[in-house]
Image (cartoon, rainbow, N blue to C red; front, side, top):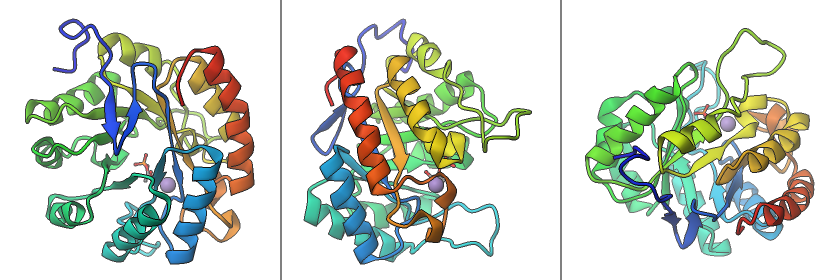
Length: 268
Ligand code: PEP
Ligand code: MN
């Protein structure tokens, strides 16, 4: 179902009225984790003003250490809904297991993120395949593009065609960045599939200074969107502060991206 051979036209996924793919470019931005009401609403207002169409924020967080902040969980989903009520932006947030699906439906989450660590959680993929909600499927830390496409296939085979693929950096021998952004994934995935492909330079780089350069590269190589972590006070962030842009830095990045998108004929 994901194969370009059988569906030559680009798929356009609609997330709460904002299109991704087929010439439509979407910027998703917000904090790694929802940390509180003022924090999420404040960031939502700033990223919206800068041009982000979708608000991201983690409520349930997949952390390497069990002693790290695990997210505000159900309360985080409520705060995302409050932010959406204020700014009107659709929300994308990570679903970590099947049991949480009712909570996500109650919260009317506009787009469900399947995180890198769950890319091959096949029961979770089947479950979101039974929904109609758009899915942001992130590439696993050590997954091939074929495996990513097969995971999309799991979702689509159950009846949900609204899948957006996300390259977020992979593990390589290089240690100077958190991960290595596989920029080649964009043209290759677009050749293999008709699905929109977005780049998450934040998790790829792991360092804020590199995010704008990688975001520009993503546009140049034909990505359909970006996911960028933005935090009001990165130094105090409860997760992924090192890679988070400040709202001012995000605003500056959007200023660079806009003419580039125009040059490539993409609609923001
Ligand atoms: C995130 O988006 O904050 C996240 C945990 O992403 P990934 O699954 O790509 O590590
Ligand atoms: Mn993060």
